[in-house]
Length: 158
Ligand code: PNS
Image (cartoon, rainbow, N blue to C red; front, side, top):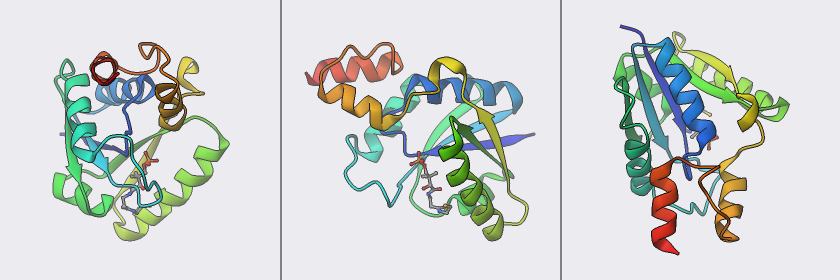
């Protein structure tokens, strides 16, 4: 059984993330979406529990995908899940520089751990949770940026 982990802060999950999840789910038997705390991102818009709930609703139709929260090191989560594959999405050279470094750190923590990069599909190359939070603040229609459960939650909060 090939198990992959797709980690991130997902504040909130976007259609770009969903695209990577669907493509990873087509390559692996099981994909765990791991909601993590990024120590560099201080003021999240959604709590970790809210982010998890929104991901669970968004991936409900993909049978081999599950979402969980993890507050420790990603490498420890991978060991706990019996996975040796981390999936990361790459949009541009800035992502590459950061992700290449993180892949090396994770390999240093767990020598068996491989990081597999999926390049962002063209319609989502400019998507980021940061940009989407900005659109939320300016009350823009959200359907073209986020999965329906997130758009519905935002509509309720308006
Ligand atoms: O969506 P993000 O914020 O770019 O995701 C970054 C994340 C959460 C995957 C990264 O910060 C992370 O792996 N944090 C967990 C702590 C850890 O394992 N650090 C070592 C690898 S850098």
